[in-house]
Image (tube, rainbow, N blue to C red; front, side, top):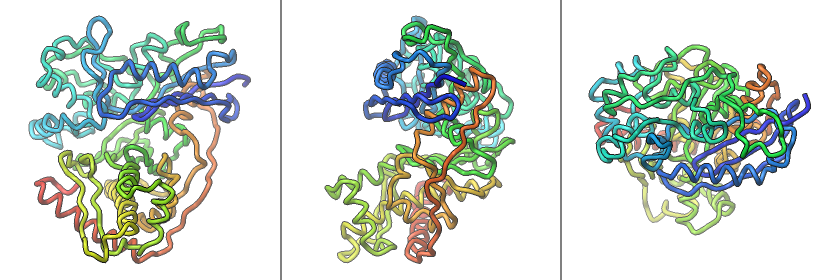
Length: 476
């Protein structure tokens, strides 16, 4: 097939636009534009960033674009008034101001009922909790809400004019069940006090609409825009995930997820029962703290990431007895939104730059290992681990993950897998078939049986358990 597909990844930190060759999926061009830091944002900023990245990728100059797809950060609340304008800043997945509302929702219905209703337990990331916060703290804005969208829905609306979404993103709202494939307006009414207009949930291969004239440039044809998806579902699609594959993605957040043909229900509510972008399911665990554990510690040490990596590899493998709980921004797994980080084992001997750097790397690895253990405990198949995301480039993290996980870790060739998944979905919507572009493994990291890494794991689990007990939370 002659032509190209465009995949868009609108993440917390930036917007990336990737142009791929239709037959092979090879990247031909790309562009990016930053998003401002923070946990709430004017959604218009995302559209401006998309225009910039679109131009940087040269999409306007192309006449061979066959389809466009969008994948974006999940959960964010985009609430529009009757005039189509936001009534409040979008609250992002990592905004924890709705922790109180989430806790009251769980207390109201109970974990079991929530899992039966939507297979997702309310935590501050979930859209429904953000709407409940809006009702309680910004009642004037809440009464003006006419439509509720997610970030990728908002971009699709501006690209095509379509008011639509997909199962993967809808499954993270708290008012849609991936098990039944239906909205739960009763939950909106119960916790928001109203049922706004909700986007149609499209099937995975369905187009949402066609590009509006401002985006088409030289294309000169009706270019389909696909249904879109959440970022983790986009990554799974970009990786062509198979049963037994577990993705560990290290970015702003850390995520651990796998593809399942059937719904996976975690009775504890720790694992979110999301949908994927193929019609299957995507049981997922998420941490609020991931790559920024490393960057924050590097900043404290006044070193760049290259020097930080050198320090982390230079000291004792167990960090000299120093142990870090990396809950800098609260945490989601375990569900401790008000938690702060901890540093234990401080002595004159242990408190060195090398040990602090090593403790930060091991803390990140252990936080991800916690998620992997939960996935195993609920019967999800764990055959192969694939490490992706910006943090996957860290030599320090690569050095400790296999021993922390207790199994090999495969590192796929570095690509923008979320954008690639969006491009695959664009091809599906345009042609009616999923393309087979394959994946290439760059490295296989084998466990080395490092006793220091194992010792750190024991100390970390003990420190985490004490924090969970002190918080009055269940050990998640």
